Image 1 (tube, rainbow, N blue to C red):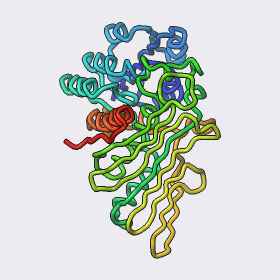
Image 2 (cartoon, helix red, strand yellow):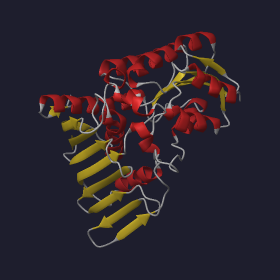
Image 3 (tube, one colour):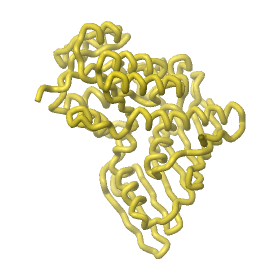
Image 4 (cartoon, rainbow, N blue to C red):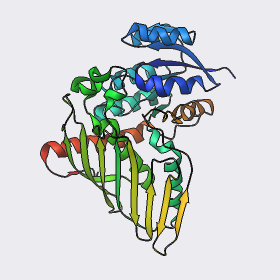
Length: 342
């Protein structure tokens, strides 16, 4: 079988640390082109992988024949780039948050459907081994009804991750639209939806800029009500200066499930009868040095294309998680709870 011809649009840190190396490690992939506002950056990857370099994604799509595109641009450009790629007949893997509005997300989904291509969103938390194991345990029914939960995702901020440092677009509202809530909070809202296999129906939130220099939020703390009635908290932060925290605790009628981001044991179940189960299933990928393990997103995307199977993290799923983020922003602005019930 011929290789999947791939173009990467946006060559910043998420491409550098995730997309490009994971594509390179997939034997079914051939790089065709790289695109970035910074031509030198695009040329660096093009030279390394014998591909073409562009600064304009429309020119790339017009001049090259590609099977798949990774959209790794600033948030404000996700929708227009993804739609252009779909209209060019390419399958699309878009970073999160998938768009800046529900309307944009719907347009992306419609473009993919119209052109008979796949749209996948890079919600990698679903693919992390501890989270996969946790969902297996929840689905077994041993914990019974979920009652409450708390989930957190934070680190010291994108200046320590972005190749642009403190000048990163992450801190510019016109390019990022949303800060920690969109960068990390959307991951955790997506994770909770997926773990529980149900939707968020009500959101209350504080979304604030407490310490960073930019004009987007650096901390968000949310209260979420699920369809089942379970309630919990979700915190997203760019001010966890002493290290990354990506943990979840779920309290159910028969016990507690803890998801840890440590090396020895990642999933712990404590039942009310005194039983304790511990599982070492593999680490959660982090942005910290030594934490650049494969996210699984690229292999999932390529397998979807090769097997002609719709991706497990679809555009529709990405839009539902985006809606929670948008509801949190609305809640913070209006200082009231926002309903997501249809």
